[in-house]
Length: 204
Image (tube, rainbow, N blue to C red):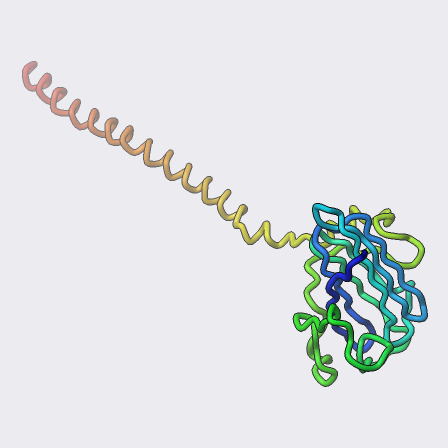
C-alpha cells in the first residue's frame, strides 16, 4: 500500500511553490499537465516504501515554464500559473485539504505584501524543466549547478589579505634577522677603532 508524502505550498501572483517532503527518495517521478494535474511517485526508506501523490491544482498551469529540483531531502517545484492571479487555495476541490497538504510558511507571502517580498531564497538550486526534458537530462545541468555557488565567499575568507599578510610578515622577519648582523658590524667597527688608536700611540 502506497503512502502520501507531506506537501508544502506557497504562491506568488504568477507561480506556485510546491515542496514534496521525502528525504532520500529513489526513482522519483513527477508529472504535470496543463490542466493542473500534479502526480508524484517515489520510494524511500530502508524498506523502499512506495509513496504516491496526485493533486488537482486550483487552476491551469504553464508546464513549459515550470521547473523542478530533486534534492536529498525534498522535491521542490516551481509551478508557473497559466494566468496570473492569486489562487484561493492549492487544490481545485473545495473544503478542507488532505492532512498531508500544508502551507509553507517559510515561503508564504500575503497578496498585499508580495510587491516588496520578492522571490524566496532557493539556495542555488539547479532546476530542470518539466516540459519534455525530464529530470537530470538538462545538458547544462552541470554548469547550471555552478551558478548556485557564492563565489564571494572566497573573498570573505580573506585569502588575498592573508596572502599579503604572510608576505609582509616574512619581510618583517627578514628585517629582524638582518638587524643583529648590522649591530655586529657596528660593534666590530667600534671595537676596531680603539686598537688603531693604541697602535698609533705605541709607534710614537
